Image 1 (tube, one colour):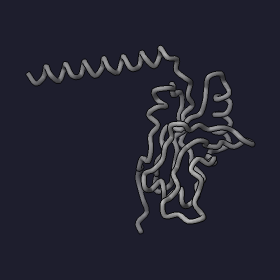
Image 2 (cartoon, rainbow, N blue to C red):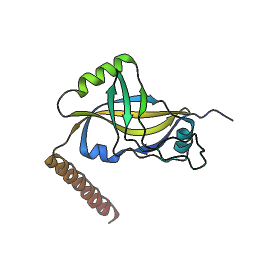
Image 3 (cartoon, rainbow, N blue to C red):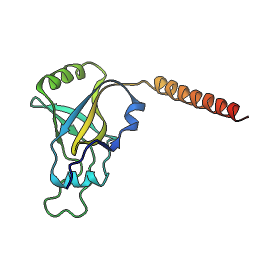
Image 4 (cartoon, rainbow, N blue to C red):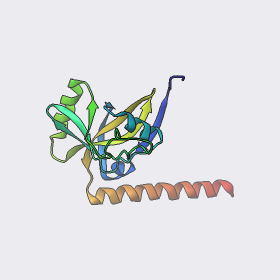
Length: 156
């Protein structure tokens, strides 16, 4: 079987970009079981409620839903188990210092295969206020309306 190459996206966390201001991103590996990888190859995962936390000097990905593999046996995994993130010590220390600041958290932004290995993009995020979310929506709507008007103008 030929080795995979390139990047294949499994899941994106669109809600995170709406609810948080992403200040920094880091790519991390994941420690997974075989049935989890098989389930991910089927393109099944949900990142919406996920977050990363520190435990014993290591970063762990929590609340990410990877459904059980349909053809799995007694070796199947639990869907929302805690998964270890693979990062260098310096990266872990840097992220933990920044995430301890008020209002900051670590959230998964996307889950993907990179050259056959599962990677997760972790973002250092700061929560947006309600008025910031409304302003971002308003700007996006204004941009869409302007693009529509320009495309209509070009057609005529």
